[in-house]
Image 1 (cartoon, helix red, strand yellow):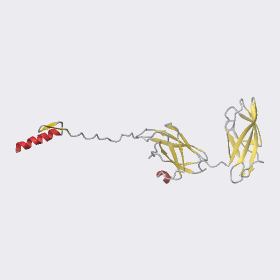
Image 2 (image 1 turned 180 degrees about the horizontal axis):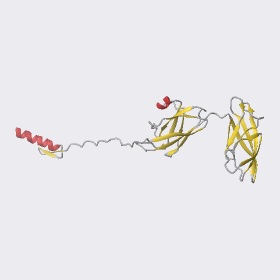
Image 3 (image 1 turned 60 degrees about the horizontal axis):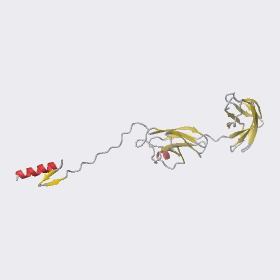
Image 4 (image 1 turned 30 degrees about the vertical axis):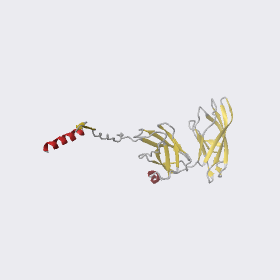
Length: 244
C-alpha cells in the first residue's frame, strides 16, 4: 500500500508539468495562467496645458498644448468649456459656453458670446469626451463693453495720400462726455490735417480726441471728424479703437 501511494503521487506531479501516462491513458497538462497586464507607465508630465491669451468684451481665447497622446494624454480636437464659478468648473457642472479646436496638437480656441466684464473658469476635454483632471484655468475676465465705437471710411485717395471720414458713436446706456480714438497705421501713413477732432498721439501711435463742441454724445448719438493723411499707398481699411 505504501508503494502504490508513491506511484500515484509521482504521476500526479508529472501531470501538472507536461503530458503523463497513467494506466495507459494520456492526460493533458493544465492550461498556463493568463499573463498579468498592468497599466502603462505614464511620465510625470501634464498631458495638456492651457492658458487664456486674449480677451474681448464678448470672447476669451485659450491657447492649448497637448503634451501626451492616449493612453496617457489626449487627441485633438480639444473642447474648451467655460464655467461661471470655480465650484462649477471643479465639478464640470453647468458650462455656460463651449468651443472646439481644430486638428492641431498646439493651437487656440476662441469662445464667443460671453458677457462683458465677467469672470470665467475653463476646463479641457478631448475628442472622446475625456475630461482633463489637472488644468483648471481662471479666473479670466472679459473686457468691459466699450463706451463708443469708431468706424472709418476712405472717401478719396490718390498717389501720396487719402481723406478719411470717421464716425464716433456712443454705445453706452448713459451720456458720453468726451471721447478719444486711437489706432495703428498699416504702413507709412501720417496725419497732415484733422478737422472736428484734435490730434492727440504720436506718429507711431496716432490718436485724436474730441474738438470740444462735439465731446458730448447721448446714448446712440454720434459725431464725425475727418483726416487728411499722407502715405505712399492708401490702406483698404483702418481699424480704430474708441474710449474716453
